[in-house]
Figure 1 (spheres, helix red, strand yellow):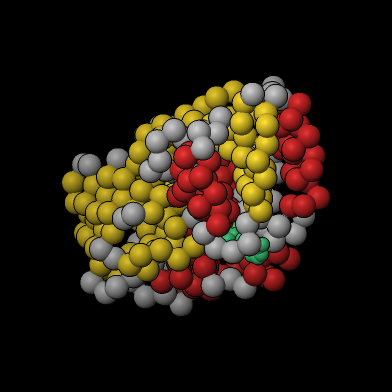
Figure 2 (cartoon, protein in one colour):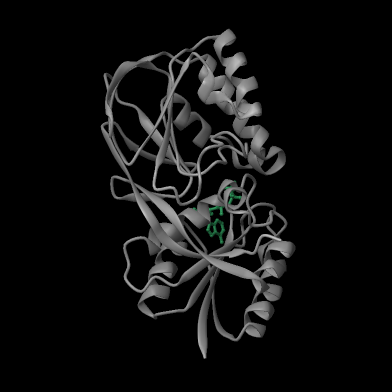
Length: 296
Ligand SMILES: Nc1ncnc2c1ncn2[C@@H]1O[C@H](COP(=O)(O)OP(=O)(O)OP(=O)(O)O)[C@@H](O)[C@H]1O
Protein backbone atom coordinates (compact mmCIF):
# COMPACT_ATOMS: atom_id res chain seq x y z
CA UNK A 1 0.00 0.00 0.00
CA UNK A 2 1.23 3.54 -0.78
CA UNK A 3 2.11 5.63 2.29
CA UNK A 4 1.27 9.31 2.81
CA UNK A 5 2.04 11.70 5.64
CA UNK A 6 -0.33 14.57 6.42
CA UNK A 7 1.30 17.46 8.32
CA UNK A 8 -1.12 20.11 9.53
CA UNK A 9 -0.84 23.26 11.56
CA UNK A 10 -4.02 23.78 13.62
CA UNK A 11 -3.17 27.48 14.18
CA UNK A 12 -2.74 28.52 10.53
CA UNK A 13 -4.79 31.20 8.86
CA UNK A 14 -8.20 31.47 10.44
CA UNK A 15 -7.59 28.38 12.57
CA UNK A 16 -9.48 26.02 10.33
CA UNK A 17 -7.03 23.16 9.79
CA UNK A 18 -8.81 20.61 11.96
CA UNK A 19 -12.02 21.23 10.04
CA UNK A 20 -10.40 20.23 6.74
CA UNK A 21 -8.08 17.54 8.03
CA UNK A 22 -10.68 14.77 8.13
CA UNK A 23 -11.76 15.43 4.56
CA UNK A 24 -8.12 15.37 3.39
CA UNK A 25 -7.59 11.99 5.06
CA UNK A 26 -10.71 10.66 3.37
CA UNK A 27 -9.53 11.81 -0.06
CA UNK A 28 -6.02 10.38 0.46
CA UNK A 29 -7.44 7.07 1.67
CA UNK A 30 -9.68 6.87 -1.40
CA UNK A 31 -6.60 7.50 -3.54
CA UNK A 32 -5.07 4.35 -2.03
CA UNK A 33 -2.80 5.82 0.64
CA UNK A 34 -2.28 4.65 4.19
CA UNK A 35 -2.15 8.02 6.01
CA UNK A 36 0.08 9.01 8.94
CA UNK A 37 -1.19 12.21 10.64
CA UNK A 38 1.20 14.71 12.21
CA UNK A 39 -0.12 17.82 13.97
CA UNK A 40 2.36 20.64 14.60
CA UNK A 41 2.52 22.26 18.02
CA UNK A 42 5.36 24.73 17.65
CA UNK A 43 8.03 26.13 15.39
CA UNK A 44 10.15 23.57 13.46
CA UNK A 45 7.75 20.67 14.05
CA UNK A 46 6.81 20.70 10.37
CA UNK A 47 10.53 20.52 9.43
CA UNK A 48 11.09 17.49 11.67
CA UNK A 49 7.99 15.72 10.37
CA UNK A 50 9.05 16.32 6.76
CA UNK A 51 12.46 14.76 7.49
CA UNK A 52 10.68 11.81 9.09
CA UNK A 53 8.57 11.37 5.95
CA UNK A 54 11.81 11.01 3.94
CA UNK A 55 13.34 8.57 6.45
CA UNK A 56 10.18 6.48 6.38
CA UNK A 57 10.22 6.55 2.56
CA UNK A 58 6.71 7.94 2.32
CA UNK A 59 5.30 8.14 -1.21
CA UNK A 60 3.45 11.40 -0.67
CA UNK A 61 3.59 14.28 1.79
CA UNK A 62 0.63 16.62 2.11
CA UNK A 63 1.00 19.74 4.27
CA UNK A 64 -1.87 21.95 5.47
CA UNK A 65 -0.94 25.39 6.73
CA UNK A 66 0.15 28.90 5.84
CA UNK A 67 3.28 29.97 3.98
CA UNK A 68 5.26 29.56 7.21
CA UNK A 69 4.31 25.91 7.58
CA UNK A 70 4.96 25.17 3.89
CA UNK A 71 8.35 26.81 4.14
CA UNK A 72 9.21 24.68 7.20
CA UNK A 73 8.22 21.53 5.31
CA UNK A 74 10.36 22.49 2.30
CA UNK A 75 13.30 23.11 4.65
CA UNK A 76 12.81 19.61 6.04
CA UNK A 77 12.65 18.03 2.58
CA UNK A 78 15.31 19.95 0.69
CA UNK A 79 18.45 18.15 1.86
CA UNK A 80 17.04 14.65 2.27
CA UNK A 81 17.30 11.64 0.03
CA UNK A 82 14.06 9.81 -0.78
CA UNK A 83 12.04 13.00 -0.97
CA UNK A 84 8.37 12.05 -1.32
CA UNK A 85 6.01 13.67 -3.79
CA UNK A 86 4.81 16.83 -2.11
CA UNK A 87 1.73 19.03 -2.17
CA UNK A 88 -0.16 21.29 0.20
CA UNK A 89 -3.50 22.80 1.08
CA UNK A 90 -3.12 26.54 1.80
CA UNK A 91 -4.61 27.78 5.06
CA UNK A 92 -2.63 30.99 5.50
CA UNK A 93 -3.40 34.61 4.86
CA UNK A 94 -1.24 35.35 1.81
CA UNK A 95 -0.51 31.94 0.30
CA UNK A 96 1.94 33.19 -2.32
CA UNK A 97 3.30 29.76 -3.13
CA UNK A 98 -0.19 28.35 -3.73
CA UNK A 99 -0.99 31.27 -6.05
CA UNK A 100 2.18 30.65 -8.03
CA UNK A 101 1.53 26.91 -8.34
CA UNK A 102 -2.16 27.14 -9.24
CA UNK A 103 -3.28 25.41 -6.04
CA UNK A 104 -6.82 26.60 -5.19
CA UNK A 105 -6.86 29.11 -2.32
CA UNK A 106 -10.06 27.68 -0.83
CA UNK A 107 -8.97 24.70 1.29
CA UNK A 108 -11.97 22.52 0.47
CA UNK A 109 -11.41 23.00 -3.27
CA UNK A 110 -7.67 22.37 -2.89
CA UNK A 111 -8.46 19.07 -1.13
CA UNK A 112 -10.82 17.95 -3.90
CA UNK A 113 -8.19 18.97 -6.48
CA UNK A 114 -5.90 16.24 -5.09
CA UNK A 115 -7.98 13.77 -7.05
CA UNK A 116 -6.70 15.12 -10.40
CA UNK A 117 -3.05 16.05 -10.39
CA UNK A 118 0.10 16.18 -12.52
CA UNK A 119 3.64 15.70 -11.25
CA UNK A 120 5.74 18.82 -11.74
CA UNK A 121 9.32 19.60 -10.76
CA UNK A 122 9.64 22.92 -9.00
CA UNK A 123 12.66 25.16 -8.29
CA UNK A 124 13.82 25.78 -4.73
CA UNK A 125 16.14 28.58 -3.61
CA UNK A 126 18.95 28.29 -1.07
CA UNK A 127 20.13 31.20 1.09
CA UNK A 128 22.96 30.20 3.42
CA UNK A 129 21.72 26.96 4.96
CA UNK A 130 18.01 27.80 4.53
CA UNK A 131 15.70 27.04 1.62
CA UNK A 132 12.93 29.14 0.11
CA UNK A 133 10.23 28.66 -2.48
CA UNK A 134 8.97 32.14 -3.07
CA UNK A 135 10.91 35.29 -2.24
CA UNK A 136 13.81 36.76 -0.29
CA UNK A 137 13.65 40.49 0.55
CA UNK A 138 16.80 42.30 1.67
CA UNK A 139 16.56 45.74 3.28
CA UNK A 140 15.18 47.48 6.38
CA UNK A 141 11.68 46.79 5.10
CA UNK A 142 12.31 43.05 5.38
CA UNK A 143 12.41 42.98 9.17
CA UNK A 144 9.48 45.40 9.49
CA UNK A 145 7.17 43.28 7.35
CA UNK A 146 8.17 40.19 9.33
CA UNK A 147 7.03 42.08 12.44
CA UNK A 148 3.44 42.54 11.16
CA UNK A 149 1.29 41.49 14.12
CA UNK A 150 -0.43 38.14 13.70
CA UNK A 151 -3.92 39.62 14.41
CA UNK A 152 -3.38 42.19 11.67
CA UNK A 153 -2.34 39.49 9.19
CA UNK A 154 -5.34 37.35 10.03
CA UNK A 155 -7.77 40.26 9.63
CA UNK A 156 -6.36 42.05 6.64
CA UNK A 157 -4.38 39.38 4.77
CA UNK A 158 -2.02 40.74 2.14
CA UNK A 159 -3.15 44.33 2.82
CA UNK A 160 -1.38 44.14 6.18
CA UNK A 161 1.88 43.34 4.41
CA UNK A 162 1.31 46.12 1.94
CA UNK A 163 0.74 48.72 4.66
CA UNK A 164 3.73 47.52 6.69
CA UNK A 165 5.82 47.47 3.52
CA UNK A 166 4.82 50.96 2.38
CA UNK A 167 5.48 52.44 5.84
CA UNK A 168 8.89 50.85 5.98
CA UNK A 169 9.78 51.96 2.44
CA UNK A 170 8.88 55.57 3.15
CA UNK A 171 11.00 55.72 6.26
CA UNK A 172 13.90 53.92 4.64
CA UNK A 173 17.40 55.06 4.02
CA UNK A 174 19.24 53.96 0.92
CA UNK A 175 22.12 51.56 1.55
CA UNK A 176 25.27 50.98 -0.53
CA UNK A 177 25.09 47.49 -1.98
CA UNK A 178 27.36 45.29 -4.06
CA UNK A 179 25.56 42.49 -5.87
CA UNK A 180 27.53 39.87 -7.79
CA UNK A 181 25.48 37.84 -10.27
CA UNK A 182 25.98 35.60 -13.33
CA UNK A 183 26.50 38.52 -15.72
CA UNK A 184 28.68 40.76 -13.54
CA UNK A 185 28.57 43.05 -10.52
CA UNK A 186 26.01 45.75 -9.69
CA UNK A 187 27.05 48.52 -7.28
CA UNK A 188 24.79 51.29 -6.09
CA UNK A 189 22.34 52.48 -3.46
CA UNK A 190 19.15 50.59 -2.82
CA UNK A 191 16.37 50.48 -0.23
CA UNK A 192 15.19 46.97 -1.06
CA UNK A 193 16.30 43.97 -3.08
CA UNK A 194 13.75 41.28 -3.95
CA UNK A 195 14.89 37.86 -5.12
CA UNK A 196 11.88 35.94 -6.41
CA UNK A 197 11.45 32.37 -7.61
CA UNK A 198 7.79 32.63 -8.56
CA UNK A 199 5.44 35.24 -9.99
CA UNK A 200 3.49 35.83 -6.76
CA UNK A 201 5.00 38.10 -4.10
CA UNK A 202 3.13 39.62 -1.14
CA UNK A 203 -0.18 38.39 -2.55
CA UNK A 204 0.37 40.15 -5.90
CA UNK A 205 0.19 37.44 -8.50
CA UNK A 206 1.82 39.36 -11.32
CA UNK A 207 4.60 41.11 -9.46
CA UNK A 208 7.20 39.04 -11.27
CA UNK A 209 5.24 38.11 -14.34
CA UNK A 210 8.17 36.54 -16.16
CA UNK A 211 8.95 34.04 -13.35
CA UNK A 212 8.01 30.40 -13.93
CA UNK A 213 8.04 27.79 -11.17
CA UNK A 214 10.80 25.79 -12.86
CA UNK A 215 12.75 28.22 -15.06
CA UNK A 216 15.95 27.64 -13.07
CA UNK A 217 16.36 31.37 -12.39
CA UNK A 218 16.31 33.84 -9.52
CA UNK A 219 14.44 36.99 -10.59
CA UNK A 220 16.15 39.97 -8.99
CA UNK A 221 14.59 43.44 -8.49
CA UNK A 222 16.73 46.19 -7.02
CA UNK A 223 14.62 49.13 -5.78
CA UNK A 224 17.00 52.06 -6.07
CA UNK A 225 14.92 55.06 -5.02
CA UNK A 226 13.26 55.97 -1.74
CA UNK A 227 10.75 58.80 -1.20
CA UNK A 228 7.02 59.17 -1.53
CA UNK A 229 6.82 59.95 -5.28
CA UNK A 230 8.96 57.00 -6.33
CA UNK A 231 7.20 54.60 -4.00
CA UNK A 232 3.72 55.71 -5.12
CA UNK A 233 4.74 55.29 -8.77
CA UNK A 234 6.24 51.85 -8.09
CA UNK A 235 3.17 50.84 -6.07
CA UNK A 236 1.00 51.44 -9.14
CA UNK A 237 3.39 49.35 -11.24
CA UNK A 238 3.30 46.52 -8.68
CA UNK A 239 -0.46 46.34 -9.27
CA UNK A 240 0.05 46.29 -13.05
CA UNK A 241 2.90 43.76 -12.99
CA UNK A 242 5.31 46.22 -14.63
CA UNK A 243 7.58 47.03 -11.69
CA UNK A 244 10.65 45.87 -13.65
CA UNK A 245 10.07 48.66 -16.21
CA UNK A 246 10.30 51.45 -13.62
CA UNK A 247 13.30 53.81 -13.90
CA UNK A 248 13.94 53.36 -10.19
CA UNK A 249 14.23 49.59 -10.51
CA UNK A 250 17.07 47.43 -11.83
CA UNK A 251 16.08 43.90 -12.78
CA UNK A 252 17.87 40.77 -14.04
CA UNK A 253 17.81 36.98 -13.87
CA UNK A 254 20.60 34.86 -12.45
CA UNK A 255 21.35 31.44 -10.96
CA UNK A 256 23.62 32.71 -8.19
CA UNK A 257 23.94 35.91 -6.17
CA UNK A 258 26.29 37.35 -3.59
CA UNK A 259 24.90 40.43 -1.81
CA UNK A 260 26.89 42.70 0.47
CA UNK A 261 26.05 46.09 1.99
CA UNK A 262 27.89 48.93 3.75
CA UNK A 263 25.80 48.39 6.87
CA UNK A 264 24.27 45.18 8.12
CA UNK A 265 20.89 44.36 6.59
CA UNK A 266 18.59 41.55 7.56
CA UNK A 267 16.63 39.61 5.04
CA UNK A 268 13.17 38.15 5.06
CA UNK A 269 12.93 34.62 3.66
CA UNK A 270 9.44 33.56 2.55
CA UNK A 271 7.91 35.78 5.26
CA UNK A 272 10.26 34.94 8.12
CA UNK A 273 13.32 36.75 9.39
CA UNK A 274 16.50 35.35 7.84
CA UNK A 275 20.27 35.97 8.05
CA UNK A 276 22.02 39.30 7.58
CA UNK A 277 24.38 40.48 4.85
CA UNK A 278 26.67 39.27 3.31
CA UNK A 279 24.32 36.73 1.70
CA UNK A 280 24.80 33.93 -0.81
CA UNK A 281 21.73 32.85 -2.75
CA UNK A 282 21.36 30.18 -5.43
CA UNK A 283 18.61 28.30 -7.23
CA UNK A 284 18.30 24.51 -7.11
CA UNK A 285 16.49 23.84 -10.38
CA UNK A 286 13.55 21.40 -10.35
CA UNK A 287 14.46 20.22 -6.86
CA UNK A 288 10.96 19.36 -5.58
CA UNK A 289 8.65 16.80 -7.13
CA UNK A 290 5.18 18.18 -6.59
CA UNK A 291 1.68 16.94 -7.26
CA UNK A 292 -0.22 19.92 -8.66
CA UNK A 293 -3.84 20.28 -9.76
CA UNK A 294 -4.41 19.54 -13.43
CA UNK A 295 -5.18 22.70 -15.36
CA UNK A 296 -8.60 22.30 -16.88
N1 LIG B 1 -0.22 24.08 17.21
C1 LIG B 1 0.31 25.30 17.02
N2 LIG B 1 -0.12 26.37 17.74
C2 LIG B 1 0.41 27.61 17.54
N3 LIG B 1 1.40 27.87 16.66
C3 LIG B 1 1.87 26.85 15.91
C4 LIG B 1 1.35 25.52 16.05
N4 LIG B 1 2.02 24.72 15.17
C5 LIG B 1 2.91 25.51 14.52
N5 LIG B 1 2.82 26.79 14.94
C6 LIG B 1 3.55 27.96 14.47
O1 LIG B 1 2.92 28.42 13.25
C7 LIG B 1 3.94 28.89 12.36
C8 LIG B 1 3.50 28.84 10.93
O2 LIG B 1 2.26 29.45 10.74
P1 LIG B 1 1.69 29.55 9.26
O3 LIG B 1 2.59 30.38 8.44
O4 LIG B 1 1.40 28.21 8.75
O5 LIG B 1 0.32 30.26 9.45
P2 LIG B 1 -0.04 31.79 9.17
O6 LIG B 1 0.96 32.67 9.83
O7 LIG B 1 -1.44 31.97 9.53
O8 LIG B 1 0.07 31.87 7.59
P3 LIG B 1 0.74 33.00 6.71
O9 LIG B 1 2.23 32.83 6.92
O10 LIG B 1 0.31 32.71 5.30
O11 LIG B 1 0.21 34.27 7.24
C9 LIG B 1 5.09 27.92 12.66
O12 LIG B 1 6.31 28.51 12.32
C10 LIG B 1 4.98 27.66 14.14
O13 LIG B 1 5.80 28.54 14.87
